Image (cartoon, rainbow, N blue to C red; front, side, top):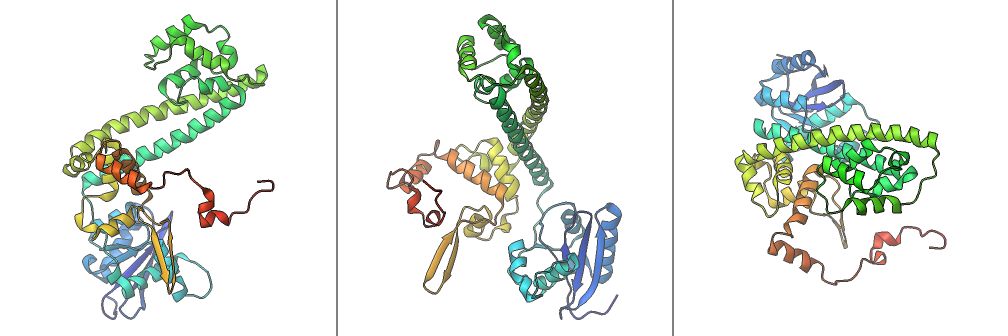
Length: 385
Protein backbone atom coordinates (compact mmCIF):
# COMPACT_ATOMS: atom_id res chain seq x y z
CA UNK A 1 0.00 0.00 0.00
CA UNK A 2 1.42 3.46 -0.86
CA UNK A 3 2.54 5.63 2.04
CA UNK A 4 0.15 8.37 3.07
CA UNK A 5 -0.12 10.74 6.00
CA UNK A 6 -3.04 9.83 8.22
CA UNK A 7 -6.64 9.09 7.18
CA UNK A 8 -7.75 9.34 3.59
CA UNK A 9 -10.64 11.21 2.00
CA UNK A 10 -11.89 10.91 -1.57
CA UNK A 11 -13.88 13.08 -3.94
CA UNK A 12 -15.78 11.95 -7.03
CA UNK A 13 -16.84 14.28 -9.82
CA UNK A 14 -19.75 12.62 -11.65
CA UNK A 15 -19.61 12.51 -15.45
CA UNK A 16 -21.86 11.14 -18.16
CA UNK A 17 -19.43 8.51 -19.52
CA UNK A 18 -16.55 8.67 -17.02
CA UNK A 19 -15.97 9.82 -13.44
CA UNK A 20 -12.95 11.55 -11.94
CA UNK A 21 -11.85 10.37 -8.48
CA UNK A 22 -9.19 11.92 -6.27
CA UNK A 23 -7.93 10.62 -2.90
CA UNK A 24 -6.12 12.94 -0.50
CA UNK A 25 -4.32 12.31 2.77
CA UNK A 26 -4.53 14.22 6.04
CA UNK A 27 -2.16 16.91 4.74
CA UNK A 28 -4.22 17.50 1.60
CA UNK A 29 -1.77 15.78 -0.72
CA UNK A 30 -3.20 13.80 -3.62
CA UNK A 31 -2.54 10.11 -3.03
CA UNK A 32 -4.31 8.78 -6.12
CA UNK A 33 -6.22 10.03 -9.14
CA UNK A 34 -8.59 7.64 -10.91
CA UNK A 35 -10.64 7.97 -14.05
CA UNK A 36 -13.47 5.45 -13.96
CA UNK A 37 -15.59 4.60 -16.99
CA UNK A 38 -19.32 4.48 -16.35
CA UNK A 39 -19.75 0.78 -17.05
CA UNK A 40 -19.54 -2.42 -15.02
CA UNK A 41 -15.83 -2.97 -15.74
CA UNK A 42 -14.91 0.65 -15.03
CA UNK A 43 -16.76 0.78 -11.71
CA UNK A 44 -15.30 -2.56 -10.61
CA UNK A 45 -11.77 -1.34 -11.40
CA UNK A 46 -12.38 1.90 -9.46
CA UNK A 47 -13.60 0.00 -6.38
CA UNK A 48 -10.62 -2.39 -6.55
CA UNK A 49 -8.13 0.49 -6.74
CA UNK A 50 -9.80 2.23 -3.80
CA UNK A 51 -9.64 -0.98 -1.74
CA UNK A 52 -5.88 -1.09 -2.28
CA UNK A 53 -5.63 2.30 -0.59
CA UNK A 54 -7.86 1.65 2.43
CA UNK A 55 -10.72 -0.48 3.65
CA UNK A 56 -14.02 0.85 2.21
CA UNK A 57 -15.38 1.72 5.65
CA UNK A 58 -12.32 3.90 6.30
CA UNK A 59 -12.44 5.81 3.01
CA UNK A 60 -15.32 8.32 2.84
CA UNK A 61 -16.14 9.71 -0.58
CA UNK A 62 -17.63 13.15 -1.26
CA UNK A 63 -19.94 13.59 -4.22
CA UNK A 64 -22.28 16.32 -5.44
CA UNK A 65 -24.93 14.08 -6.97
CA UNK A 66 -26.36 11.91 -4.17
CA UNK A 67 -28.14 9.31 -6.33
CA UNK A 68 -27.57 7.03 -9.27
CA UNK A 69 -25.81 3.80 -10.12
CA UNK A 70 -22.36 4.91 -8.97
CA UNK A 71 -23.67 6.01 -5.57
CA UNK A 72 -25.41 2.65 -5.14
CA UNK A 73 -22.17 0.88 -6.06
CA UNK A 74 -20.12 2.89 -3.55
CA UNK A 75 -22.63 2.39 -0.73
CA UNK A 76 -22.90 -1.34 -1.46
CA UNK A 77 -19.10 -1.61 -1.37
CA UNK A 78 -19.12 -0.12 2.14
CA UNK A 79 -17.83 3.41 1.49
CA UNK A 80 -19.37 6.26 3.50
CA UNK A 81 -20.78 8.48 0.76
CA UNK A 82 -21.04 12.14 1.77
CA UNK A 83 -23.23 14.35 -0.45
CA UNK A 84 -22.05 17.97 -0.68
CA UNK A 85 -24.48 20.41 -2.22
CA UNK A 86 -23.30 22.11 -5.44
CA UNK A 87 -23.88 25.51 -3.79
CA UNK A 88 -21.31 24.60 -1.13
CA UNK A 89 -18.83 23.50 -3.78
CA UNK A 90 -19.40 26.70 -5.73
CA UNK A 91 -18.83 28.81 -2.61
CA UNK A 92 -15.58 26.95 -1.84
CA UNK A 93 -14.18 27.21 -5.36
CA UNK A 94 -12.29 30.54 -4.77
CA UNK A 95 -10.29 28.77 -2.03
CA UNK A 96 -8.62 26.65 -4.69
CA UNK A 97 -8.28 28.89 -7.71
CA UNK A 98 -8.58 32.60 -8.45
CA UNK A 99 -9.74 32.09 -12.03
CA UNK A 100 -13.10 30.60 -12.86
CA UNK A 101 -11.67 27.54 -14.60
CA UNK A 102 -13.21 24.13 -14.02
CA UNK A 103 -12.07 20.57 -14.68
CA UNK A 104 -13.34 17.18 -13.55
CA UNK A 105 -10.05 16.13 -11.86
CA UNK A 106 -9.85 19.54 -10.20
CA UNK A 107 -13.39 19.27 -8.88
CA UNK A 108 -12.70 15.74 -7.61
CA UNK A 109 -9.70 17.06 -5.64
CA UNK A 110 -11.76 19.96 -4.32
CA UNK A 111 -14.53 17.62 -3.12
CA UNK A 112 -11.98 15.40 -1.37
CA UNK A 113 -10.29 18.37 0.31
CA UNK A 114 -13.59 19.91 1.42
CA UNK A 115 -14.42 16.57 3.01
CA UNK A 116 -11.00 16.56 4.69
CA UNK A 117 -11.30 20.05 6.16
CA UNK A 118 -15.07 20.37 6.70
CA UNK A 119 -16.26 16.79 6.86
CA UNK A 120 -17.74 17.32 10.31
CA UNK A 121 -20.33 19.63 8.71
CA UNK A 122 -21.80 16.95 6.47
CA UNK A 123 -23.66 13.72 7.18
CA UNK A 124 -22.92 10.57 5.19
CA UNK A 125 -25.64 9.28 2.92
CA UNK A 126 -27.73 6.72 4.78
CA UNK A 127 -28.82 3.85 2.53
CA UNK A 128 -32.56 3.42 2.25
CA UNK A 129 -34.36 0.11 2.00
CA UNK A 130 -34.81 -1.70 -1.28
CA UNK A 131 -38.58 -1.13 -1.03
CA UNK A 132 -38.06 2.64 -0.84
CA UNK A 133 -35.64 2.58 -3.77
CA UNK A 134 -38.21 0.68 -5.81
CA UNK A 135 -40.95 3.11 -4.80
CA UNK A 136 -38.72 6.07 -5.66
CA UNK A 137 -38.03 4.64 -9.12
CA UNK A 138 -41.76 4.14 -9.74
CA UNK A 139 -42.74 7.59 -8.45
CA UNK A 140 -40.04 9.49 -10.30
CA UNK A 141 -40.73 7.54 -13.47
CA UNK A 142 -44.43 8.36 -13.22
CA UNK A 143 -43.68 12.04 -12.54
CA UNK A 144 -41.51 12.19 -15.65
CA UNK A 145 -44.25 10.58 -17.74
CA UNK A 146 -46.79 13.06 -16.36
CA UNK A 147 -44.48 15.91 -17.37
CA UNK A 148 -44.22 14.41 -20.86
CA UNK A 149 -48.01 14.07 -21.04
CA UNK A 150 -48.44 17.72 -20.08
CA UNK A 151 -45.97 18.73 -22.79
CA UNK A 152 -47.73 16.70 -25.48
CA UNK A 153 -51.14 17.93 -24.31
CA UNK A 154 -50.00 21.55 -24.52
CA UNK A 155 -48.66 20.92 -28.02
CA UNK A 156 -51.92 19.30 -29.08
CA UNK A 157 -54.03 22.10 -27.60
CA UNK A 158 -51.90 24.74 -29.31
CA UNK A 159 -52.22 22.92 -32.63
CA UNK A 160 -55.99 22.64 -32.35
CA UNK A 161 -56.45 26.26 -31.33
CA UNK A 162 -54.61 27.26 -34.49
CA UNK A 163 -56.79 25.41 -37.00
CA UNK A 164 -59.74 23.83 -35.14
CA UNK A 165 -60.53 25.59 -31.82
CA UNK A 166 -63.78 23.68 -31.30
CA UNK A 167 -61.97 20.37 -30.82
CA UNK A 168 -59.87 21.92 -28.05
CA UNK A 169 -62.96 23.26 -26.26
CA UNK A 170 -65.47 20.42 -26.53
CA UNK A 171 -64.11 18.49 -23.53
CA UNK A 172 -62.55 19.89 -20.38
CA UNK A 173 -59.15 18.20 -20.84
CA UNK A 174 -57.65 17.65 -24.25
CA UNK A 175 -55.73 14.62 -22.94
CA UNK A 176 -58.72 12.90 -21.28
CA UNK A 177 -59.60 9.45 -22.69
CA UNK A 178 -62.84 10.72 -24.26
CA UNK A 179 -61.11 13.72 -25.87
CA UNK A 180 -58.35 11.52 -27.29
CA UNK A 181 -60.92 9.05 -28.63
CA UNK A 182 -62.82 11.93 -30.25
CA UNK A 183 -59.68 13.32 -31.91
CA UNK A 184 -58.63 9.89 -33.10
CA UNK A 185 -62.01 9.53 -34.81
CA UNK A 186 -62.37 13.18 -35.92
CA UNK A 187 -58.87 14.67 -36.41
CA UNK A 188 -60.00 17.53 -38.72
CA UNK A 189 -63.04 19.83 -38.98
CA UNK A 190 -64.06 18.15 -42.22
CA UNK A 191 -64.54 14.84 -40.37
CA UNK A 192 -67.39 16.32 -38.30
CA UNK A 193 -69.47 17.85 -41.06
CA UNK A 194 -72.00 15.01 -40.88
CA UNK A 195 -71.75 14.65 -37.11
CA UNK A 196 -75.19 15.13 -35.59
CA UNK A 197 -76.63 14.63 -32.14
CA UNK A 198 -77.56 10.99 -32.79
CA UNK A 199 -74.08 10.00 -34.01
CA UNK A 200 -72.50 11.98 -31.19
CA UNK A 201 -74.64 10.18 -28.62
CA UNK A 202 -73.66 6.82 -30.10
CA UNK A 203 -69.98 7.82 -29.95
CA UNK A 204 -70.29 8.85 -26.30
CA UNK A 205 -72.04 5.61 -25.38
CA UNK A 206 -69.41 3.54 -27.20
CA UNK A 207 -66.63 5.19 -25.17
CA UNK A 208 -68.60 5.18 -21.89
CA UNK A 209 -68.56 8.94 -21.50
CA UNK A 210 -69.46 9.76 -17.90
CA UNK A 211 -69.57 13.55 -18.14
CA UNK A 212 -72.62 15.63 -17.41
CA UNK A 213 -72.94 17.19 -20.86
CA UNK A 214 -75.45 15.85 -23.34
CA UNK A 215 -74.58 15.16 -26.97
CA UNK A 216 -76.44 18.32 -27.97
CA UNK A 217 -74.52 20.44 -25.46
CA UNK A 218 -71.17 19.10 -26.62
CA UNK A 219 -72.04 19.69 -30.27
CA UNK A 220 -73.12 23.22 -29.44
CA UNK A 221 -69.77 23.84 -27.76
CA UNK A 222 -67.98 22.43 -30.80
CA UNK A 223 -69.92 24.62 -33.25
CA UNK A 224 -69.72 27.79 -31.12
CA UNK A 225 -65.92 27.95 -31.30
CA UNK A 226 -64.28 30.15 -33.96
CA UNK A 227 -63.77 28.58 -37.37
CA UNK A 228 -60.18 27.92 -38.39
CA UNK A 229 -58.85 29.44 -41.61
CA UNK A 230 -56.70 26.48 -42.71
CA UNK A 231 -57.47 25.13 -46.18
CA UNK A 232 -58.25 21.47 -46.85
CA UNK A 233 -54.65 20.50 -47.67
CA UNK A 234 -53.23 22.28 -44.62
CA UNK A 235 -55.99 20.87 -42.40
CA UNK A 236 -55.24 17.33 -43.60
CA UNK A 237 -51.55 17.81 -42.82
CA UNK A 238 -52.32 19.09 -39.35
CA UNK A 239 -54.77 16.24 -38.89
CA UNK A 240 -51.86 13.83 -39.33
CA UNK A 241 -50.01 15.63 -36.55
CA UNK A 242 -53.14 15.41 -34.40
CA UNK A 243 -53.24 11.63 -34.94
CA UNK A 244 -49.55 11.32 -34.03
CA UNK A 245 -49.97 13.34 -30.83
CA UNK A 246 -53.10 11.39 -29.91
CA UNK A 247 -51.24 8.07 -30.26
CA UNK A 248 -48.42 9.37 -28.08
CA UNK A 249 -50.82 10.66 -25.44
CA UNK A 250 -52.85 7.46 -25.41
CA UNK A 251 -49.68 5.46 -24.72
CA UNK A 252 -48.64 7.88 -21.98
CA UNK A 253 -52.07 7.90 -20.33
CA UNK A 254 -52.11 4.09 -20.28
CA UNK A 255 -48.58 3.87 -18.86
CA UNK A 256 -49.34 6.48 -16.18
CA UNK A 257 -52.51 4.64 -15.18
CA UNK A 258 -50.64 1.33 -14.84
CA UNK A 259 -47.79 2.92 -12.87
CA UNK A 260 -50.26 4.71 -10.61
CA UNK A 261 -51.95 1.41 -9.76
CA UNK A 262 -48.62 -0.20 -8.91
CA UNK A 263 -47.54 2.79 -6.81
CA UNK A 264 -50.81 2.76 -4.87
CA UNK A 265 -50.33 -0.90 -3.96
CA UNK A 266 -46.63 -0.40 -3.11
CA UNK A 267 -47.12 2.55 -0.76
CA UNK A 268 -50.05 0.88 1.00
CA UNK A 269 -47.85 -2.15 1.74
CA UNK A 270 -45.19 -0.08 3.55
CA UNK A 271 -45.60 0.76 7.27
CA UNK A 272 -44.32 4.31 6.66
CA UNK A 273 -46.62 4.54 3.66
CA UNK A 274 -49.67 3.89 5.80
CA UNK A 275 -48.48 6.60 8.22
CA UNK A 276 -48.13 9.23 5.47
CA UNK A 277 -51.44 8.14 3.93
CA UNK A 278 -53.12 8.91 7.26
CA UNK A 279 -52.33 12.62 6.81
CA UNK A 280 -55.41 14.68 5.89
CA UNK A 281 -56.23 14.08 2.24
CA UNK A 282 -52.73 12.85 1.42
CA UNK A 283 -54.05 10.14 -0.86
CA UNK A 284 -51.86 7.33 -2.14
CA UNK A 285 -49.99 8.94 -5.01
CA UNK A 286 -49.08 12.09 -3.05
CA UNK A 287 -48.15 9.97 -0.01
CA UNK A 288 -45.91 7.85 -2.23
CA UNK A 289 -44.25 10.97 -3.64
CA UNK A 290 -43.52 12.26 -0.13
CA UNK A 291 -42.23 8.93 1.18
CA UNK A 292 -40.11 8.25 -1.91
CA UNK A 293 -38.15 11.45 -1.29
CA UNK A 294 -38.08 11.31 2.52
CA UNK A 295 -36.92 7.71 2.62
CA UNK A 296 -37.19 5.46 5.66
CA UNK A 297 -34.02 6.51 7.53
CA UNK A 298 -35.17 8.59 10.48
CA UNK A 299 -31.74 9.99 11.29
CA UNK A 300 -31.35 11.63 7.89
CA UNK A 301 -33.03 14.80 9.15
CA UNK A 302 -31.68 15.87 12.53
CA UNK A 303 -34.19 18.70 13.06
CA UNK A 304 -37.53 19.91 11.73
CA UNK A 305 -35.75 22.95 10.28
CA UNK A 306 -33.41 20.69 8.29
CA UNK A 307 -36.37 18.78 6.88
CA UNK A 308 -38.17 22.02 5.99
CA UNK A 309 -35.05 23.28 4.22
CA UNK A 310 -34.65 20.03 2.28
CA UNK A 311 -38.30 20.27 1.20
CA UNK A 312 -37.88 23.91 0.19
CA UNK A 313 -40.77 25.11 2.36
CA UNK A 314 -38.72 27.47 4.51
CA UNK A 315 -37.18 30.73 3.23
CA UNK A 316 -33.51 31.68 3.32
CA UNK A 317 -32.57 34.52 5.65
CA UNK A 318 -29.55 36.71 4.93
CA UNK A 319 -28.42 38.91 7.81
CA UNK A 320 -25.35 41.13 7.99
CA UNK A 321 -25.05 44.05 10.38
CA UNK A 322 -28.29 46.01 10.26
CA UNK A 323 -29.43 44.54 6.96
CA UNK A 324 -31.67 41.52 6.84
CA UNK A 325 -33.39 39.89 3.92
CA UNK A 326 -35.58 36.87 3.36
CA UNK A 327 -35.59 35.19 -0.05
CA UNK A 328 -37.11 32.16 -1.71
CA UNK A 329 -35.23 28.87 -1.21
CA UNK A 330 -34.13 27.61 -4.62
CA UNK A 331 -31.69 24.93 -3.47
CA UNK A 332 -33.80 22.01 -2.26
CA UNK A 333 -35.30 18.68 -3.25
CA UNK A 334 -37.75 19.99 -5.85
CA UNK A 335 -39.68 16.72 -6.08
CA UNK A 336 -40.19 16.69 -2.32
CA UNK A 337 -41.28 20.34 -2.34
CA UNK A 338 -43.85 19.67 -5.06
CA UNK A 339 -45.27 16.73 -3.12
CA UNK A 340 -45.36 18.50 0.26
CA UNK A 341 -46.94 21.70 -1.07
CA UNK A 342 -49.50 19.68 -3.04
CA UNK A 343 -50.45 17.80 0.12
CA UNK A 344 -50.53 21.03 2.14
CA UNK A 345 -53.02 22.50 -0.33
CA UNK A 346 -55.14 19.33 -0.27
CA UNK A 347 -55.09 19.16 3.53
CA UNK A 348 -57.03 22.40 4.00
CA UNK A 349 -60.03 20.79 2.30
CA UNK A 350 -60.10 17.94 4.84
CA UNK A 351 -58.59 19.36 8.02
CA UNK A 352 -60.27 22.26 9.89
CA UNK A 353 -56.92 23.01 11.54
CA UNK A 354 -55.12 23.32 8.20
CA UNK A 355 -57.94 25.41 6.79
CA UNK A 356 -57.71 27.72 9.80
CA UNK A 357 -53.95 28.15 9.28
CA UNK A 358 -54.54 29.18 5.67
CA UNK A 359 -57.33 31.57 6.61
CA UNK A 360 -55.32 33.26 9.35
CA UNK A 361 -52.33 33.64 7.02
CA UNK A 362 -54.48 35.70 4.66
CA UNK A 363 -55.26 38.48 7.11
CA UNK A 364 -55.97 41.57 5.01
CA UNK A 365 -58.51 39.88 2.67
CA UNK A 366 -57.40 42.19 -0.15
CA UNK A 367 -56.67 41.38 -3.81
CA UNK A 368 -53.07 40.88 -4.88
CA UNK A 369 -51.24 44.18 -5.39
CA UNK A 370 -48.03 44.07 -7.42
CA UNK A 371 -46.94 47.49 -6.15
CA UNK A 372 -46.56 46.17 -2.61
CA UNK A 373 -43.55 44.02 -3.58
CA UNK A 374 -40.16 45.73 -3.63
CA UNK A 375 -38.71 43.40 -6.26
CA UNK A 376 -41.66 43.98 -8.55
CA UNK A 377 -41.07 47.72 -8.46
CA UNK A 378 -37.64 47.19 -10.00
CA UNK A 379 -39.12 45.66 -13.16
CA UNK A 380 -39.21 48.29 -15.95
CA UNK A 381 -42.70 49.11 -17.09
CA UNK A 382 -43.55 48.82 -20.76
CA UNK A 383 -44.26 52.06 -22.58
CA UNK A 384 -47.84 53.08 -22.14
CA UNK A 385 -48.21 50.63 -19.23
